[in-house]
Image 1: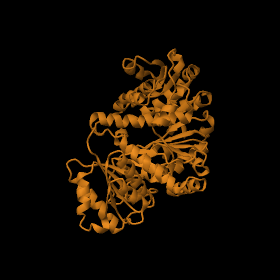
Image 2 (image 1 turned 60 degrees about the horizontal axis):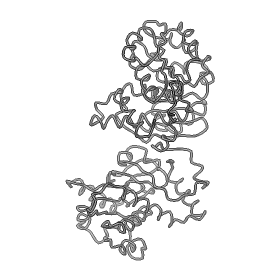
Image 3 (image 1 turned 180 degrees about the vertical axis):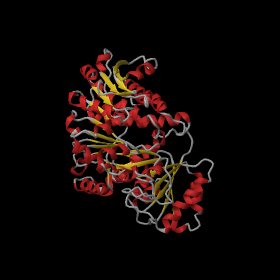
Image 4 (image 1 turned 30 degrees about the vertical axis):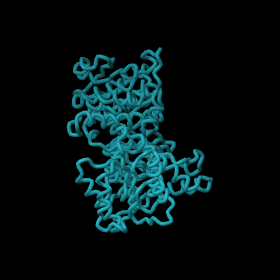
Length: 519
């Protein structure tokens, strides 16, 4: 799935029309795809299903009318409620009528009696009132229809399933601003590409699920090929994950070396190490300060251990020689979870970075310490994977957290290019940026991941994938998507986000991998 601005989407459609795919054909394809989404629902066989389309004057209203025509021919009862759209001389409205559907108009329904009747009996609502050009506040006629719909649905014991056509009506598809009257969708079916405003708050809260429908755009369309931002989804990540042949042995899936932990943050090492194993690494070697070995070895019998000298429970400079002797035994390295910020640990990093020749992931305190070292980005092997949250990114760049959060995509890409490394800017809608200009957005914003230790799980997933031979960017994208999905899965398993711990996210990783078809 690609991410687009409204102007980019308009340019793509114009380009497609000029290349021979007419606007009418694109609408036909969109409407048919929308209908196919409805047809995939697990309705009870033999039950009459009513589909109500709220139809505005724009293209998404046209998409909804085309969908009604297809659904009517599949035996659905169809109704269209027109909002600021004239029925006369409208070929799409005529198609609905010819297929046996009903059509009513807000213009002739001043008290909303017909609208309320339709809403009370509908099983599915297609929200096609406003499209990607809408900007709050809404004009009164449209706002009143949406407000009445919201109120009526809220009072129903069995409310209909709401599908937003392209976007929920009232969302600004560039900024994410949302009108008060916007109807929350259970599913948003967006056409051809994800509009960037949908992956911003508060719009994201109104999306429900998200699905992209193909409208027939040629793959070689110039304006389409210029798009560089992907939206992560299952198919993309499934294609990335390494195969697991039947004749494999532990060496097939690589060794991940994880240098992590201190007496203040014992759990960070355990979470990251287990995550690397859970995502498929063949062997995980834990390099930890000596006091942690006794605490962790009994809890993590699958790992092998490199015991490092310490100062008061933090990795010391003297650990560098021992650590360097073990570097050539691994295929990927993770540095930083739970390190703390002691000067002795910074000196340890300074001693080892020039010796690192294998793929490396820097996380957490490791990033803060690394950023204090002159020319650090030139001294580590490229491309490394860097996984800062906004606070760590602030330390690394000198920018305020507000500056970063207000311009996440541009900031992530700027520093990925400047530093020459893959950057994972964590948070709601985590961004993965590559030095070559590629970018992927994780379409997840969930409080299940706003908990200590979840970043350690993410870092472990990424290094585990690196150890299996995935490149830096692919490892970061796949790791971030699995991590986000595991957070959602953990919340579902516990009935909400409040009680989710990092260990619950880790425990959900196998379920996510199974759903992705891994292994």
